[in-house]
Length: 197
Image 1 (tube, rainbow, N blue to C red):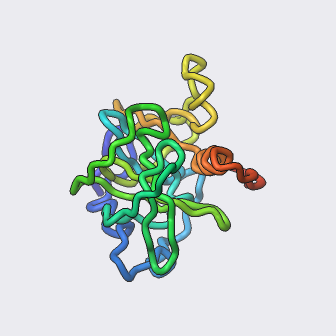
Image 2 (cartoon, rainbow, N blue to C red; image 1 turned 60 degrees about the vertical axis):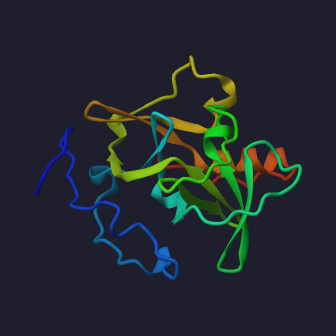
């Protein structure tokens, strides 16, 4: 078995079982054999926004889509690109880079852009990211707290910083992001589930 920096196993094609075709669902994908979660670490989907590498727990991601036609919505909140329809469900689509204050809203649609469909309960939305990279595992020892120098505005949206060898990933707290999105349109926050971190 090939091993990457940090002693973690290197999968032949880590996204092969995770990318979802139009008619596939994550529920239909094969379930890997059970492993001790502490020993194996938590799995995160790594993605890029600008030059930075981010990651979100795969438990928070329902599917990955290519960017398709988006219907713009007049007077939408900041960072909302519009809505898209997925299996008859209309989802708001956000530019995650703009939502995090990293850049102005970018309405361009590029081939490498992907939409991460995220949600918990009734709250589901699409997050447009610049590119999807791979699935990575983080052991608890490889996750550092959010530095105090990070502004309060975005610190609550982060779980911490994850290290895999020389690479540093910014770990997103998807439920906190959904709460922030709900608050921006006047909806109440959902009760928080217990996190593994």
